[in-house]
Image (cartoon, rainbow over all chains, first blue to last red; front, top):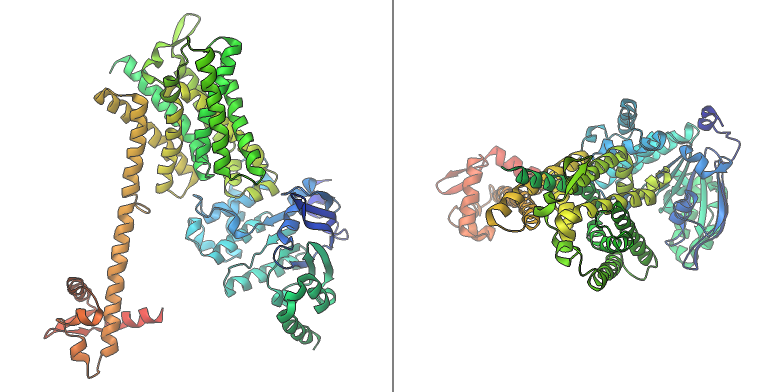
Length: 264
Length: 369
């Protein structure tokens, strides 16, 4: 595959295909035989109750944990061949924010994948990183030590880092967790921009209320895949009940309200 | 200063610098204790290789020791991965077992060679220059200096070449893995470097002080900077400073050089801990005091503005009884009142505190927060 093809994958092929993914921790399955097809160019939420395996699905797809069974294809090829097409935003809490480094430095880490082993960052990488900081409105904080940033600002840094990976598919684990309303708005605007430029975005999401507003595609997960497809078709009370069990009581009400708003 | 003294100091400085380099990453990865584990368990490798080769200066000793260092990491991590034992406990399970095996082997089978437990624990820098390294009859200096210089260059090369990989695998192992920089490989590479360094330094300073030289300079540097590259150079600087000053302290006290070096590491850390500009104890204490005074001033302006123009104003703003209303200590109250006057937040008229415009603005701004 030439460099050109790599950067412009065939958009008729699904961006991500997961087949028969099973992940178990000490014989206890946390993901059971999940099949997933994510078409190119959607903005998809993965929702489900706590312990449904949302983060696990993301990590297993990216090869960060070894599944007991299952196969992953990124634009029709195995993940290790397609690394450059994929950007990953882990949960904010998974890194040490006291690490001695600056915001700009963290963003530049997103360029490492393009460099490979040993090669060093160039001036160009620095420019790209700075532009990404501008896109998330954080250019003033470029030289700031990262533990002096608020939660929302840290999340923006993570987002900028994903932008400089210049990928086709973005995997994000709870990007809205613990951020203020302004940051949430900024993030969703950015995700929509990415989608309009033909990227595919897959977001582990917590807040059911905002699913119809933010996303056009959704996967409901609870150890097994409950449903997946366009939000209009699969984000129904029946499927939510199947995913969340009895706990959906109060959600059901707001949901019908949301759905009726959508139908108007 | 004699050549001997110079050579000892040079060796001490090289050992300290070589230890400080990987130490930075151990501290940042919160695995500082791994250096303790490795520096002890390598004894087993040294003893076993000695039994096979029968030569204390064989390079196989270094390789065997490094292999035992890696074995320690692998064993500790596999015990930890079972999920039955926590990380610190699994380190604590593995290295004493390997170390004591080494101690038993020495005492049982090698009692008559120069591989005694004192040398293992503390090393002996002062004797190092007597073991010379010669090539074609030319004296190239102490053998351990040659070995440690090689290790220092190795460590420097490793960190320069894999700076970016070490950085990302330490800060965000998840992203490192997703980008194709296996954190596992980087971890083992770092642990190999730590092992080799420990073997070399072991000879000079013994297994306990290796830990001091790896952990303390890095921990000291961490207090002073928020840049990784600066932290690395500062660690090296602190290590070398501790080595040289430790040598002279030992000279002056006629005490163990290695022990004095470790003490100086601790002294430097203590000083920095006290006076570091951002995170030092003194700075923190001053900052707290200043915040307390500023907040008290703001509270005073709020109190005055509440009662401004009301019938009780005279009573509430009287300098003499102010402390009763504020529920403050009397001397603290007069100090705050004086400061508020100096800062033009209030003026005193007939022993009454009257708000200025500036004071009124501060009260409003504080309440708006």
